[in-house]
Structures are given as structure tokens and as C-alpha cells.
Amino acid sequence: VRFKTKETADNFKAKFEECQANIGKPVSGSAKVESSSAAATVVVQKDVSEETGEENDEDYEEYEDEEDYDENGETIMFHNNATLHIKGESGDFISQGEVDLKIVYDDDVYGARILAELPTAAADDEGIVCNHLIAMQTVLAEDRLEWSALDFSSEPPTQRTFRVEFDDLGVSSEFKDMFAEGKDLAEQSEILETVDEQDPSTFYYGQGGD
Image (tube, rainbow, N blue to C red):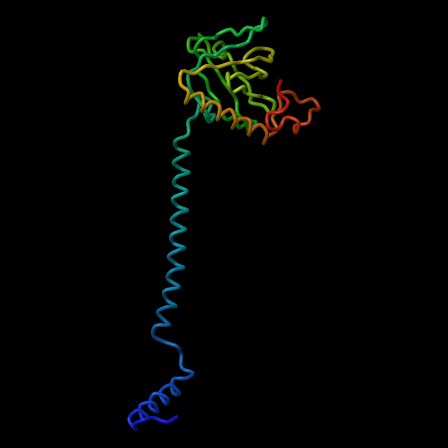
């Protein structure tokens, strides 16, 4: 290589010798800072994920605290006042008046139970006018909020057809949603009204209802 001046040649030689002397030495300076930054990023991401997990735990605990329970300790999925009608032997619906209507989670069967109680009953047993599980074959007619089920509020249990009315469309919508959740639970737990030798798969997704 030729250079125009001796000064340029001397500078090139000095730099070349400096580079040769540095060959094999550990990398330092900016490269080290880059590596430290990468390590710090991983630690921060880990910390953020841990904090998120703690927040989720807090949300779950808060949800648990806000859950409602009835006097028997069962989780309330739905609770409101409604006008209840029960179909009579003649085929006409007979009004039971205003009732305290609940859908509760029954942890004995891992399913949902519908309960309706008259507010003016003298005794608790007399006040229950609807008491049944939401089974795989329980089908809700959503346009008129009507369904049939094996009712345990009477002795012996009797197949009955119910219809409810709410004053608010939002409450009606909530009832439909919770009824659907009850159906999902029934299908997961294979809850049938009659045991016999019926195949539970024939009642999935609302099949099997009259």
C-alpha cells in the first residue's frame, strides 16, 4: 500500500499495530453494556409477569368474596322476583303469584337447581312451589320462558311445566343465560331426570326434550 505522505503512512502503521495488539483480548465497552441490558430486560419481564399473576389472584379472591350464597350455603347463580305459572291438569297455566326465584349451584351433583318460594308462606316447606335440577333434557322455550322438569316440591316428585314472567327484559335475559349455564353443567355432569338405561349422549345440546 502506498500513501501520499509519510505522516499518513505512520498513522496507518500505528493503528494497524494497535489492532494487532488487541486481537484475542476480551470484548469490552459498549458490547458489555448491550449484554447487561438484555439480561435486565428478561428480569423485568419476569417481574411484570409475576405482578400480573398476583393481580389475577387478587381478582379471583375478590370474585369469591362477592359471591352470594343462600341460607343452605349454596352459590346463587340467579336471584330475582318473578311471577310463576304452573300448568294444571286441564292444560291451562295457573298463576302462583309473585315468587322468590333462584338458580343455585348444587355441589352435591355439580349442577344447577331452580327454586321458587312464595314470600307469604307460613312454613318453609309450604312455601316451596318449584324445586328441581336443570337436567340434560330440560329445555327452555326462550320466547315464553317455559320449561318442564321433574319437580321435587311435591311428594311424590311430579313432572311439571313452569312459566315465569319478569318485569324487566334485562332480568329475563340474565335468567336465560343462567339457565343455559345450568344446561352446560348438566351436560358436563351428565345429569338426567330418570336413570333407567338412557344414553346421556342423546340429550346433549337440548336434545330429548318434549
